[in-house]
Image 1 (cartoon, one colour):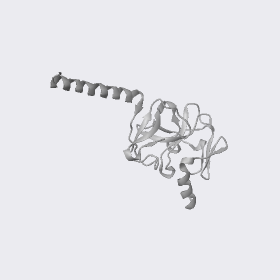
Image 2 (spheres, helix red, strand yellow):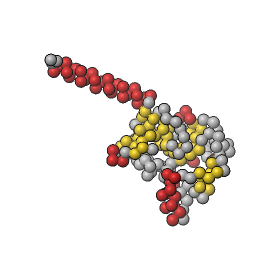
Image 3 (cartoon, helix red, strand yellow):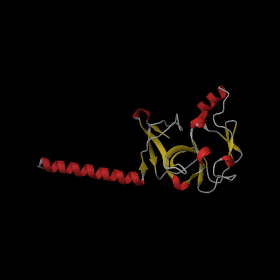
Image 4 (tube, one colour):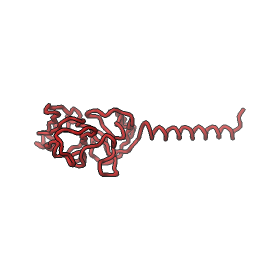
Amino acid sequence: MKSTKELWKEIGLTIFIVLFLFIVMSMTLFSLPKSEGYGMAPTVNDGERVFVNRLGTVRRFKLIYFKVPDSKDKSIRRVIGLPGESIQYKNDHLFINQQESVERFLQSQLKRAEQNEELLTTDFRLQQIPNNKYTRIPTGKYLVLGDNRPYSSDSRYYGLVDEKEIIGTVEMRIWPLHKLTSY
């Protein structure tokens, strides 16, 4: 039978190994950032924690975690425009390559804005994005917008997001536990 001292040594070593593996994996496979601000409300609210897959594939309407251009900040926003596309908003309708695309995740907010005779997303064209003179999104760049459009700082303010600045895709909200949600 093992002594109490040996048992505690094994427990301590096990905890150390688990913590070491967790830290290594969080640097390479995932991240658990806390959302700051209200730019993604009600999808992700201030202070909520999300699971970010560092190896996730960036797709349209997927949430991403990235380094904000010309800033030390990191943010969560939704991918709207992909490389090679032209983007325009007109009367709360998204047009990708001159074809209307429905943003289902905004339906309740769009309905509320229409009832109040307001626009959720102000009209803009890709050429109005800061630091962008192109009619199509350049290779390796993405247009991102917050779900809380009237109050979100996003590509409309800081420009397109470079692929190299994307940390990963947001897969789920993990905190608070009662709001656990997969995206």
